[in-house]
Structures are given as structure tokens and as C-alpha cells.
Length: 455
Image (cartoon, rainbow, N blue to C red; front, side, top):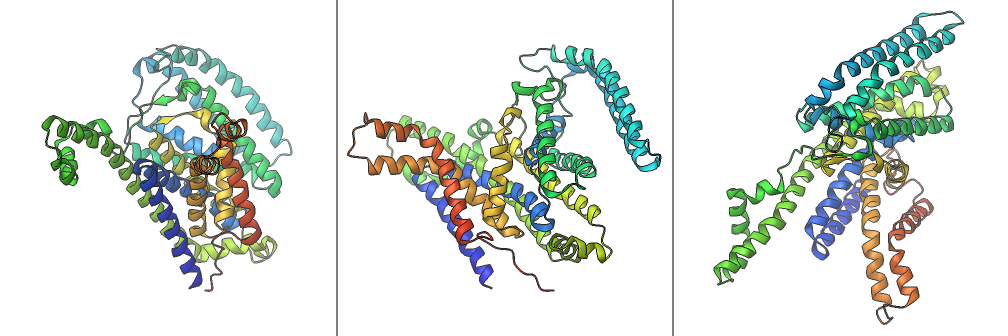
């Protein structure tokens, strides 16, 4: 009962803080923070399933997020037909060779019992990879030469953007399956290093394979599941709605031209808020749905089994549980959720920027959310996503406010004041470290510790 009260208090405080941002800064900023908090909460729930449910350390979060973002490009972007005509055949042949190589490796690994099995796999890889390079090389060069300033890549299948979120989850789960087959037998510290390195490989691919993702040139103008601001500003129903909402304010303006100018400003500013609110509703539905299923899974026999494996692997093995197989399942599920969140993030940003996937923001900050919120608790993972992202965004405005308030009598040319103001972007690291230290000191199990479920 006390734990439920803690949940209500914690999320009430977070709601009030976001509302304060709306009142003192703007509602557009408040909704932007809310949307990124919701996306971050989905990310932290994926990591929490892996670490909190089964004790798996996954430091490759940014790689799975990038895979989700890549799915948005492949699924929702219109195809570039000139690029397909120039080199599509070579890419398809190279893809078939890759599929044949993967099948051959898995076949040899599972069916061949000879002691030379690993040597056979090595020969297969060094034989087929150069052939793939020869086949795809000219095609890639031809594709990247097609109007390189605006396209220079194959594009996608021009399908609905929401569909790409589910494809991103499936792709992330597939990569997790391959990764898990290779790495899940490693000790926890080696697993952490291996997943971090694999995520680095994924980021390198999306950065440099311009024929697929445009690399560092970025892909912009992505579809969205919400209306565009320009369309709203030209829609009679939206203009009418804003006019009725602000009717009392507009009625006080007697000059018709000034009234129309004010209405136009209100429509422009409200369109951005309306779009962000649409995203908030979509992301909230995703998060609530994920929370419901996660809670049901945690209380099911499967959830009890995963916690038993996490707490004592040897005892679970003695009871006949296939620990490696269960670890693979939870690793795939958690990675799928992370990939889904990556697709959500790219959709919300409206562009895919591979260079932005950095370990600090897209791996270790997510881990801070899980640890600060409460390992093994779904509500704690969500709260951690809200708290950490809120601090990450609002620490700079708060630092500027405090500096200006405390040093209001000091001249702006003062070197100390100038140095503090120039250092404001780094206050977020100070606040993040201080917050984590305080929580680890006084709430070592997180803000919302894992509940002991009695069945």
C-alpha cells in the first residue's frame, strides 16, 4: 500500500514540475519535455527488463536505438527510383549473399559436429565477404552518386510511419538474437563490453553506409503520425477552434486588422502546441500499454522464473531451467522495446542523424534512469525516465536563473559571473552526478524500489 502511495506522490510531483515549466517558460517546452520523458521511459523499461528482470548487462542501448531509427528510414521514406535503377540489382545480390552466409554459418554451427567446425565457418566468412564487396562496391558508388546533395541513397518502402515502429522492434530483436547467440555465454562484465562494441559497429554502419541511411548527411522530412503545423494553420476547423478558445481575448481588440493579426499569431503558436499534444497522446498510449503487459508478465509464472534465474542461476539450473535460453528471450524482448523507442524518437525528431547516437546520451543516461528509478520496478523505470530527462533539460535554465538571482548586484562584465554563465551547459552533468549520488546514498534501491511479489 505504501509503495502505491509512493508511486502516486512521485508522479504527481513530476506532473506539477512539468506544469510549472508550462507556466514559467512555455507550454511548447513543457510538452517537448513530456514527450521526450515518455520516449525515455520506454527506453528505460527495455533496459529494466534485461537488467531488473534477469540481471543482464546491456551497454549496447544506442545500437538498438539506432536500429529502430533505421527502420523508420527503410519503411516510411519514399523510394529513390533513380538510385534503384543505378545500383539496386547489385545491392539485392549482395543481400542474398549475406543471407546465404548467415544461413550457412548457423547451419554449420548447429549441424556440424566436427572439431574443425570453427575453421569451416572462418573459411565461409573470408570467402563470401570479399565476393559481396566486389558485387556491391560499384552499385554503392552508383547509388551515392545519384543527386548526392538531396538523396544519394535507396530510400524506403513509403509505408505508414507507425508500422515502422513495429518493424524497428523486430529488427532490434533479430540483432539481439544474433548478439545473444554469440555473447550471452560470457561473464557479466565481458557481456557489457561485448554489447557496447557491437553497438559501436551498428553506429559505424549507419554513419558510413550512405546508400542506406545517407550517413552523416542525415535524412530529413520524415513522415509523422500527427498533423503538420502548416496544415493546421491553413485549416478552417483549427482556426475556428482557436478563435473560440481565445474569443474573450480577441473581443477586447476593436481594430479588425489587429484582431486578425493577433488571431494569426495565436494560430501559429497553438499549432505547435497541438502537434506536440498529439504526440503526447500517442506516446502515452504506447507507454501505458507497455506498462500493463510488463506488469502482467512480471506477476506471471514466467516473471517468477526470470526473477529466480536473476537471484540464483545455479538453483534455477538445478530445477531444470534453461538459463541461457531464457536470457536470450529476455534480451530479445528488452532490445525490441529499445528499438521501438528508437523509432519513436526518430519519428518525433522528424529526422535521422546517425552522428547524434552517443554513448553518454543513448546508453549511460538510460542506465542512470533505471538505477535512479528503481531496478526491477516498472514504475521505477518510468519515473527514472521522467526525473533524469527533466533534470537533463531543466538544469541549464535553473542554473542561469540562480546565477542571475544570486549575482544580480554583480556587473555583467565581472569575470566570475561571465565564467559561470559560460559554464551553464555543464551544470547538467553536475546536477546529474549530484542527484545520482544522493539517491544512491539515501535510496540505494532507487526512488521506487522493487516490490516483493508474493504469489
